[in-house]
Length: 252
Image 1: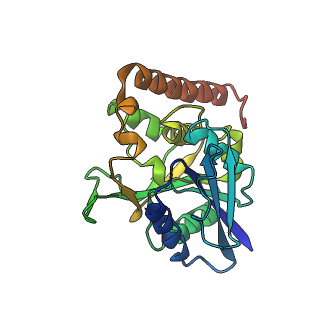
Image 2: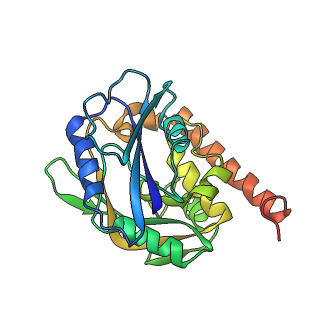
């Protein structure tokens, strides 16, 4: 059996959202020979997950000192046995077929290191809204995400919450960035700095919009911290590119 590890960091979980995330996993029909595992990591040691997760042997539950979502995700990676790692936030949902699409691209195209997909915002009334500037289906060349991100006020053309990435590439990049937020954007840009990616035009994620999400908080857009986050993401990508040019990282 070949595994895809779905990693979910959790802080002050909303039970119905976490259940919906699980339901979206059980609705996945994977290619023959593949299975998923769900690595759920509490960001803290409050036992907030007690009684919230189903009795399913495919679920691995863990906790650790609170350090933000990037730290929680990277700690969860220690328990991930899959060749591929899929991101799923505790308040989001995968759409049917998304894991199969990710697996198919990454098994059929060994040179592609990661995939993303179209994301639909899930509004409180249950309706969905898509992004009107998605790229076309297909290959995203190395470096394209950084260039778009820099040219569009630090907004990437693909959504990091839909990322599926090869585990060895994820480990080589050091996991998620040690930032209080935007750690997933930093990983996406770093991954594209060293590897081609792929975008699926079929919606792959329902991204829940609600008052409790991290990106809706005032601290997330506080200019001093945001500028610092963007700077270190940009500098990391630049350093990776410089190493590549000097054949110090995966040189030919």
